[in-house]
Length: 109
Image (cartoon, rainbow, N blue to C red; front, top):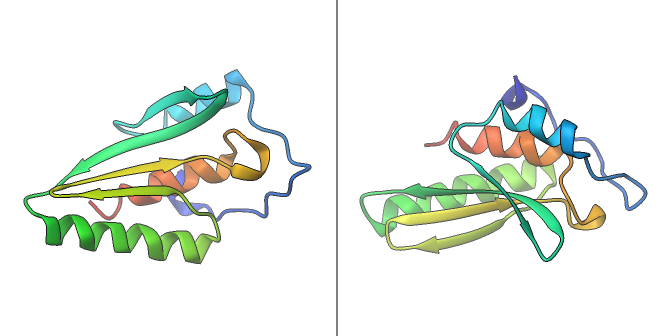
């Protein structure tokens, strides 16, 4: 299971996942979207909450995860909603690390 794995160091010499690898890992995620922005594949999910404080607490949990894994997403915090977007900046695409962190985010909600 992805949420049991740890991120590995991803250098600029690493290669982004190919279409088949992305598709296979994506089957292990629930309710995430895989999209391409400006030629960069990304994973994105919108989490909803009853209020701002709960959304904020979730965003903080994702931030703690990012620090633990040394892999950092884009986090958009709004009233009752948090949008989390994962991709590997150094390779301008998706790496297994992104799928690992996405799966771990789902454990908080």
